[in-house]
Image (tube, rainbow, N blue to C red):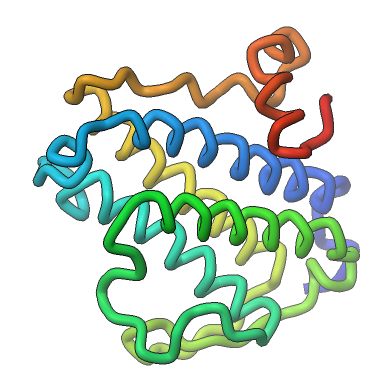
Length: 187
């Protein structure tokens, strides 16, 4: 893919997505941290079966794609089905992954975004994809699974948080204190 084939402003869009990702994870985790343990770990009708496994999957995939994009190792070599047994370390790890993703997007040039990355899926299938497409996929993956957790929270004692107050200026007052706490730009 050549640089001219990229949408104008793709880097800015991906940067906004990376920041939104961090903010949304913070909001969702804040709600989950208020859940009693039995509700958090409860088996529920969902893709992975529990809130915990969904959240663990999100951070696992973030680290996996960051490895693919940077060539650095983030995941333990002996990773199994679950990275985290408890929510508190998962939240810390997700915040670290979110900041790494923001840094990656901030440093990405048009040349970076139009370059390709090759990687193997967990089943061994080899793929080569444009970096911009990989990032877009990663953000879609996050949104998809956060939506599932959001839905599962609606069946608990903790109300699901509002997750769509990030981009519009008219919603700024609803997110400003959290953006400051996360050291994200107030936009």
